[in-house]
Length: 524
Image 1 (spheres, one colour):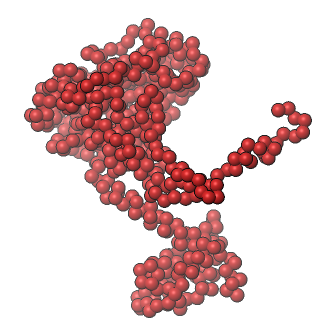
Image 2 (cartoon, one colour; image 1 turned 90 degrees about the vertical axis):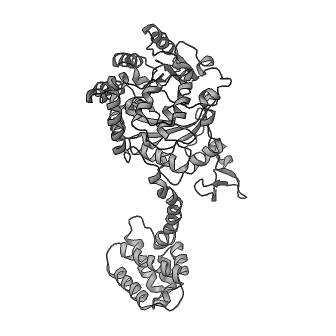
């Protein structure tokens, strides 16, 4: 009879019941707990009570070695309840699958992320630090004499941008040695950060991740060495154009940024003064795109695309919308992070109008969760409603995001801010000024691979080297071939290997075995 009943449960459940078997001497409390759950499992509707009963047996066996016989239960009784579970579950999930296997899988997964969750508070985002940032803002506004209108407007932020060491020292708490270093660097390189972005720097925090991105250090002049030629010098087939790939071009429409980052790949393009280029230059770039029907994707960048006046940005998008083979437009900008006040109804209207013709994607760069404040997140949310996607291209930077907790926190915060983590670039090798900010590739691979199986799949970026184009740096998780011809795969989240049956290469190449093979006499 028992054997007949067991045909009603799957192999996972049979194996699970085998593991629960055994006797022992339970305490009165243990016996009462199990029998109470047993009664509920028999009488209650649904599956929850059944799961609770079997989970209790599983825990008793693991913690005390007590099997179900110790409680006067029979295998036949357990089979009856297990059968009810499978019948009631919408997808036919068995007790053995749910409690015997899924619980184990989840326990292992939970253990993997415990370290990250424990360290999460040590990597605060802009929401958690917002009260302190507002205190910083009040101090900076006072120092710079900014009104409410100044602070809350794009023009006010730019007009009061911090460009010199004396102003910086009044707005941001810096040691005297650092001030001397910055003075030395700014004799050669431009410095600019908006008052808003300066307010994100936490006073007294050594190597604050926002400070490291905004305020240059002595290494920029001490490591100068021999700089490789700018990227555009060997990938610019037309005025303002960069092109690595046949179907994609970048148009560098300005050299302006609201803030000059201390790791900028295009440091050679910044120059000594801000420039919006003449309409003639833009026209030459557009004519190149018009004459090349292979091009389908155009990136408007700089500098920063959102630094363009609305009239110019709108005109460029209209021109691209009138080129039939241009199917996609991208706008490269860091402004929603450095000066979110730029994102107003006029800009949103321009984005929406162009996105209505063909997709517009905003490509931004956020490198630390600290940059994602309530203000910047509101800006990204507003943009997300007007464009097809917002993509983030972070740069892996020493001391800023070069650990699992920091990068996981960044990507999850981006994900929750309407932004798709898209790329993580290894810091440029072309610029010796940034040698001190570079991270070994193996370290980067470990950080990115650690995300798989631990955070949402579409929150995991691709790890990229910019070396004459974008080259993926991920490890291969195809370890080799198994004896049966399958593939041996490595799970990046825990290193465990599994065998994955591959398609039959001979069958794949045999057209006669294709599902809709041609009939005799049909043209090839």
